[in-house]
Length: 155
View 1 (tube, one colour):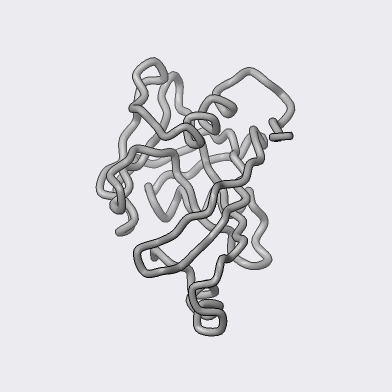
View 2: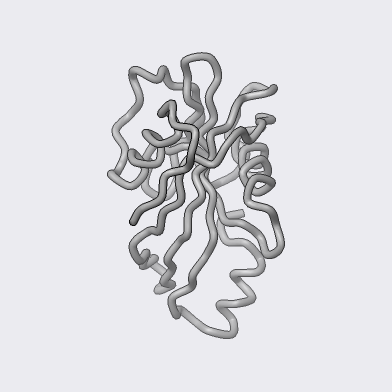
C-alpha cells in the first residue's frame, strides 16, 4: 500500500500540511550482493524503504517492509545511519519530511519478487556494480556497507 492508513487519516484532518514522518531504509546484503527495488514512482533503484507505523519498532518496520516489498525474510543487524530528508512535495500537494533510520540487514530466506505496487522490479546487484543513486540514498548505502560499528549522525 503506497500511503499507510494512519497518514490517510491525518491528511483528512490537516490537509496537505508538512508531516514529520519516521522512515526506515533496509540495506539488505547477501554474500557480495545488495537487494534493491526499482520504484514505480520514479524508476530509481533503491534499497527497501518505508514508513514506520505508529508504535512500531523501527527494526520491525524494516523487516516488515522487506517482506511486503520483496518477499524476503531478513535479520536487522545494526543501525548504520540516522538522517533527515529535505522537504518532499508530492504531485497531490502533500508535504513531508522524513527522519530516516538506515539499517544494515542480512538476507535470511526467500527469493525476491515484486510484492506490491510501490516497485516494478526487484533484484540482487553486485556490490561493485550498483546502479546510480541520488546523493542522499548513496550516502545511506555507503554508511551501511562500511565496516563502521557505530551509527553515523549528521551534525
